[in-house]
Length: 128
Image (cartoon, rainbow, N blue to C red):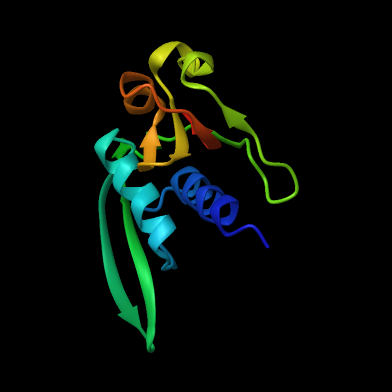
């Protein structure tokens, strides 16, 4: 099962349903992805909770008049097919309004950061 795609679809669906907060199971990878989305201003806040003995990530979403900031997501690299991009191949998503999330040798980065650092990596997903 693909845990990253489950997480990003849960976030998108919660925003479309008008929820302000989403709880997803914790992992270090998910937490670092959420920190990047927080830095890119797609989510308000991320915190770690313990619920019934299990670690969870509580994600607060940006909502403006019950309209979510996250309009769509697209999973690029899947467990069955990995997609890698060079730093020269990284392009803006939705004319700069979106973000590409990459897994690089220096950790999880947005497309803008990876291009500035001249790093390529596995393209996880794009969000807008």
